[in-house]
Length: 162
Image (spheres, rainbow, N blue to C red):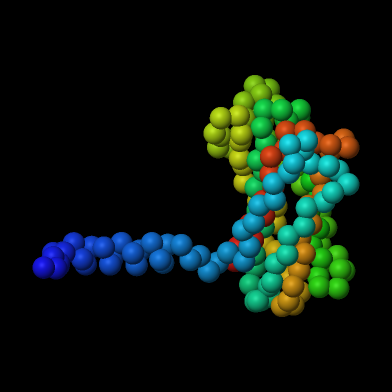
């Protein structure tokens, strides 16, 4: 004998599955990736690159960098250089950004933390336009003037349509 679920419970399960399906797909996000560093940290001569395909060059994008560091990080800030290159390697945009990771007077970490690891999002380009559709590389170089930046856990990139 087969037992059936009551109608209200069946409809509730279907509604929940649809809600989860639509909540997971965010079409405004062009890229959301993270690069994890080895335990030694971020080596200055090893930039981090992300590839993105721009399907609509007419819209503005917001570019966020997500920094994760632990308590071994020796500075209160992080200077990094974001560069955007087209498919031929030509630099479309280059800049210098500063991420404040700790309060300079109190030393209290900024952002969300779990254990001794802290994460903070930084808006690097609030209104970024790409010249044409196609593939681009976004490169992040650490600009802290040390060979190996200890305490860096990972760095991520989030590009979303505005």
